[in-house]
Image 1 (cartoon, rainbow, N blue to C red):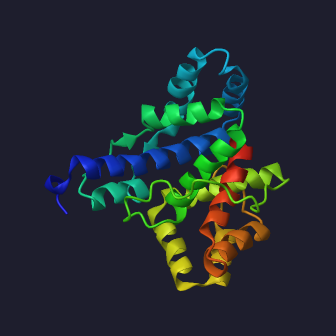
Image 2 (cartoon, rainbow, N blue to C red):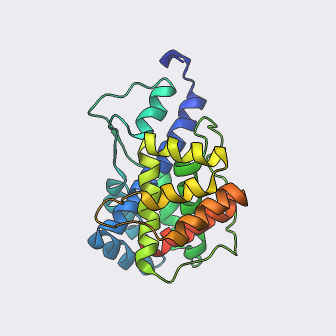
Length: 239
């Protein structure tokens, strides 16, 4: 596919996928940067009374912390190049103002727990486990699975967020994980997930976490459950 084959409609779809990867980058930064998490958390209770703070949240915290550097084996690099968008070594992408504002409005709602958990569920599944060649699959679910558990272990919640981000951003790792899902190899997928050494000294996810994700994707084939599981726990680790 050549760059000339790009239409405005297709480019819009590509940028929608980019926004989700940038959102995942932001949630990772909210996990590893305590200062960012505290600063944003302090704003949420004030958003309804002080609408101007929404601009602060979007432009000072969300968008700058969503910067994805497009390195050689980055999934977003591969995604753009395979769709006819050439990437150079200096390129990076950030979340659009529209998507940032969408998350800000969700954070301002009384039921922000469910709203943002659903955003992160869709973002996490889309970026880490879905077929990126399907450009229309930008939002996968319109509600959370109520049966998907929220873990009591706050450190494991954080590890889930780092795991999903790490799979999503590394094209080779992501491809390996998706191939194991396609093969229906639950044991191999579980082993792979627990073997991934997480960045920022977060260690490894628990065996039970890996089993929940692998069983949901391979045996139950219930992607809504898996997406809800990762979305709910990423929310607890970040918001």
